[in-house]
Length: 161
Ligand code: HEC
Image 1 (cartoon, protein in one colour):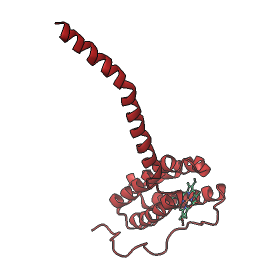
Image 2 (image 1 turned 180 degrees about the vertical axis):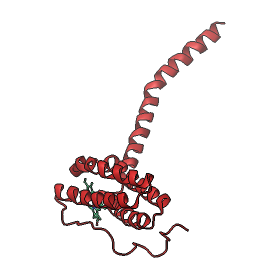
Image 3 (image 1 turned 30 degrees about the horizontal axis):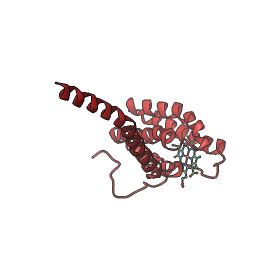
């Protein structure tokens, strides 16, 4: 019995002693994971913008062809990028202005929901103007966005199939 008690006390004392060093190990692991996260690839604001640019162009042709399913998808892709920007580009002060695009996105999204080509055209003009408003507001006014003349890529149908 005495032996068992001794064993129990010794085990408890040993585990208590182990606790701080386990914490240290855990902290080391957390630190190394943090370094990994910090060094891992993060898309920059310019990359998000280039991605948005493609979806903006595809969206135009989708809407023009009254391919509302595709238009809705392209709006979703722009939306996702807009939502990711504050998360991934928190170090860029320009990100504070991103909210100015929300009303234009909402109105275009509504035009697509009601499948109204006229509303879509007006909404797209407003969206494009807002892209440029933000570029001007953030000292990037030399990036001038316009309604595209030709589809951005030739290996995709924009007409509903
Ligand atoms: C925060 C406000 C803001 C909004 C809204 C915005 N942009 Fe930008 N855009 C920027 C900034 C800032 C840059 C410069 C990024 C950089 O430093 O690489 C930029 C750069 C760009 C570029 C150049 C990317 C490159 O690397 O060549 C394109 C294209 C672009 N934006 C397209 C758009 C389109 C299309 C929209 C609208 C659907 C839009 N942007 C909306 C702020 C904005």
